Length: 323
Ligand code: SD4
Image 1 (cartoon, rainbow, N blue to C red):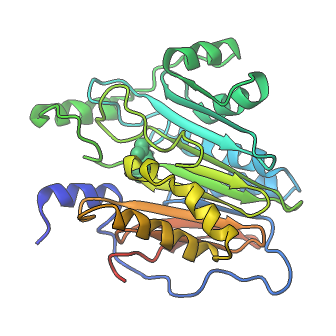
Image 2: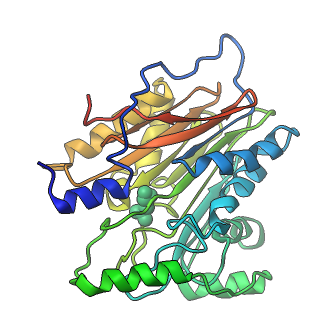
Image 3: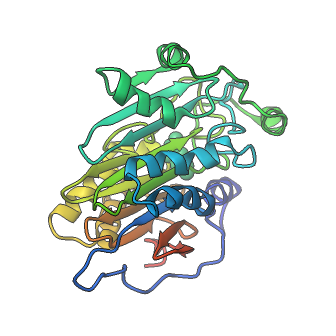
């Protein structure tokens, strides 16, 4: 019998969605490279992929594609886990984490950023307009404002109401992963054969103020190595950080694993590091230089969107719990 706590944690990550196990092996291009291609986490990956595909189908750069793609859920108040409309922390502040990485392994990141609707674009500016990789909190906000980003209120009425509802029972422990949250991680292979990735989130709902997850951390929430492949993560960020999850996925591919196997082995690592993973969900997606892709999660319910050959579709990832 599943406990209420676990129910919340699993539903948070879509864990009780009907399982339609995707049993086919990852796409394998015969001889050629499957490009362009874009892949991203969860249902909100579908419209995000559309925007990315507009760039890719015009021979655009993967970096531009992933930025354009993830800006869609960032701006959508109905997506309560990314950008504008995202759930606040336990003190009512919407704090956003994002990072982006290109084919030259240049990367930019912002964490605990408030008031800016498109943290992914600020992360890109960190690459282009600063000598740094990561800016956080007030400093990230000052940087964004200096770059011309507009200061906005990101807490929608719906998210404020949900937060106030949550506060009625909240015990204010520094718990994470209590309620619904899911990040968008996006990976693209452009028609020049270059890889880039982006990852953006409002993080765990009702998190401690100042808590930063895996999503803005290069090697945890996102990693790109243009010689090998790229990976993105979603789920309980603390577990992804502990294992340098996406770096591990890419290194697995470097040693010859196909993307799905590389993700499965990273999930296995998390499983091995915990006495129980009953309460934990983590999902990975990965793409390699040939345009093969795959995903894997701990619990059932994780899905990802793939746009290839002019066709955008959702795939239910295989998972450890069902194995
Ligand atoms: C975090 N990994 O902040 C993010 C949240 C997430 O699906 O991806 N949820 O830990």
